[in-house]
Length: 239
Image 1 (cartoon, one colour):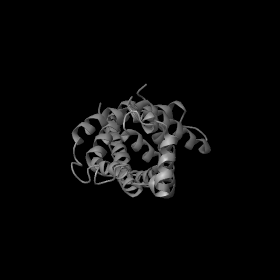
Image 2 (cartoon, rainbow, N blue to C red):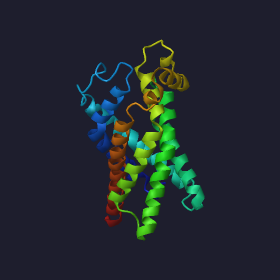
Image 3 (cartoon, helix red, strand yellow):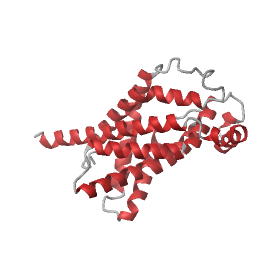
Image 4 (cartoon, one colour):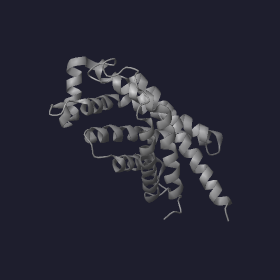
């Protein structure tokens, strides 16, 4: 079963997950506080934005590893010789399977899935398509830095269009226990934000989110491709 390099994908995914969390955790904390119904300053402002970084990095290795081994397995299972017009569908299915497979059981689970699946439905087909186009234009497979640049663009675009779902997830996670928002109803959370804050509320934190996820896409997908290529090369050189 390891013919397509599943073990390599597992290790490379874990390395990529740790790398991006170590660098971007503070930006995600700022984004979450911007989306807090309490307001940025009352939610903590810039205080303690590095708190929790070690535990997040430790937890990100198995999560990212599980995502990428699922992603690569589903792509392999659906066969690499798919028609070109079906390739985005294959990447959507693979990314969705990876996201569903790694979500934990906690308050906000439903909203996290509803946020991450649409995000992945946009990000990964766009990332793969951009890599394919770049490879075609230069008549060779993209380098890791080029893959990272494609990941940055795909991540930023996906982050922008899914910001309302991210706002809903944040509101659900921060809601007081027993409140209607805490029940996990995403549509109700979105309606509440729209009623009280309008369009600006639905896209609260969009620019920090785009900045963080664009940089995250560059690091995450670039580190994954670089680590995977390095491990595959080492595997070919070993006796």
